[in-house]
Length: 428
Image 1 (cartoon, rainbow, N blue to C red):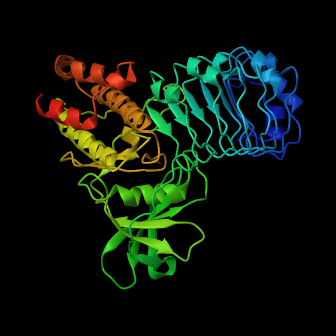
Image 2 (cartoon, rainbow, N blue to C red):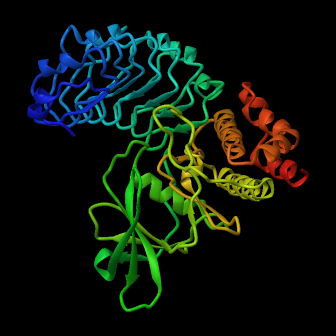
Image 3 (cartoon, one colour):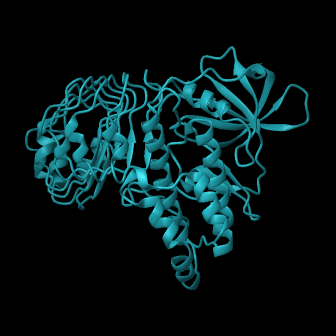
């Protein structure tokens, strides 16, 4: 993190600058780095506009304007020759004009704004791979968006959609979709479950933190057993709505690859869940996507799997996904970074922040939505292949290629269901 004073004293070229200093206007001093700057993070300021000559930053690839005061997307961004990622998360956007973004854009974050419409020419952004628009006031999508055929991840939760167009579920590369907390996707009230006050628990160490909440090790009253307590952070996340997340998780019911819920919190400003404590022998299977991988997971150096271990994990993923779809719930975030595994290849699928309740959608859309997740599983298999030895990766090609091709084929309606994949994997 820089401040204006240290930047003024810096003579070396910089490729990345983070600057949060209560700025009301774009600092002219940044132009000294116009030939080198690739990532500019001006989050947490008071900016409302950008200079008309911002395109002087010829190498600028990623621009973060999170938590500022923009009400519109400045048209100068369309002139930035290298820009592939923009974030206006947590601003006051009401205006998204036509042709205001560069056509090479791949990653667009507009979460938590006040947009009521997208421009009719949205389809001009044909290279988009990742779009986050949860927490706006959108009620429709422009038909031109059908041209965004590279789109892999889309977040439309917590908007005002009363229906969705069929073409949305037919986008050939879409694999991670979240539509929760819209009138079109109401979550059935969860089954009754024990409710405790937060004050009934002793909180110990923080076990983890995700987009939607923080998980603590905890103990109820005087009981000896330790549990995991998840406190949600707010009413909106990058994926959707914590209240829906909680109810979808409760509605998912019991399955060997889901962490069992013991209670929910009451008398709290925000919802919370109490779950079984996963043993310390479990660790996260993957790491979230990077700037470069965009929609695909990353892995720690030296991480590896055998082909047998991969098959064991794959059978569990397919089993739990078949269970969720049977409960009319999509997960929306089927990734290795949302899975916990131990050395015996036991697996838990977590993080329901992007889950969607399907029961109110038309039957055809329900089926296609589930088929989108099958593509996510195909990507997951390919990601797992990267952890195999060279010899076993060749074996993977021989054994799994047909399954992968079935999962990622571009015609969404031709993909198998997870229950069919269970039989296919069992027969390998």
